[in-house]
Amino acid sequence: MYKRQDLGHATVRVNGGPERKAALLALTSRSVDLEIDGQAHTFALGSHWEGHPHEGRPQQVYVGNGGWSCGLDVLTRESRLARVLAAIEREEGVADPEVRSPMPGTVVSVSVDNGDAVEAGQVLLAVEAMKMEHQLVAEVAGTVHISAKTGDLVKADQVLATIHAEPPAGPSESPIQDPTNERKEA
Image 1 (cartoon, helix red, strand yellow):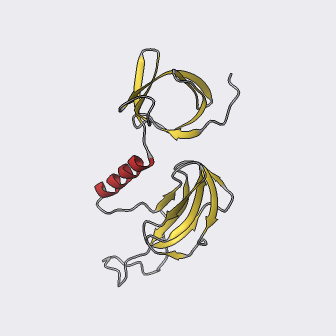
Image 2: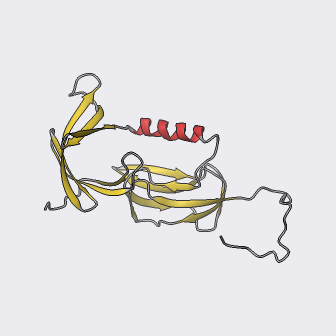
Image 3: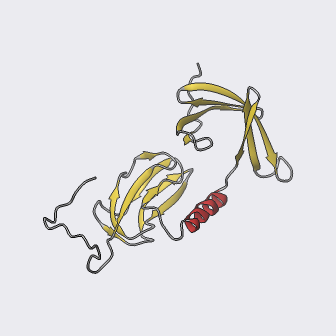
């Protein structure tokens, strides 16, 4: 069994399968040792470079073991942002009410309190990762619920805040009215 080293960790999903916890144990130019759901695995490693291999980053990394291989796209911050924006456009303007950490890091500031009303684009909190500070903003207007505090260590894609959208202004257009005016939970 490997002695776990903190070289990086993430939650991964392969081909739409279940989420699994993965940790990077060791990395060489020819292999990668990963711990997936508590079990250590060694995979052969290859890459496809755009241009000369000693300049920049690979475009794709291939991992394989036992006769199979899988190509993984190497995402820069810009390419990840482009994918996120494309997904938002595909949703035809629907914004995610969950504010997630873009990478593992530390919460360095929280600008709002639980229950505060926020506007779309308002800074909610900041996460520091790799000596860079990422300000996370509200995608929609509404009431915010913060699930992290200053000093918390967070994982990539961890939900740090949820925004409950404001109901539309004006009278309800629902033809069915609840005479007891009680809230019902599903």
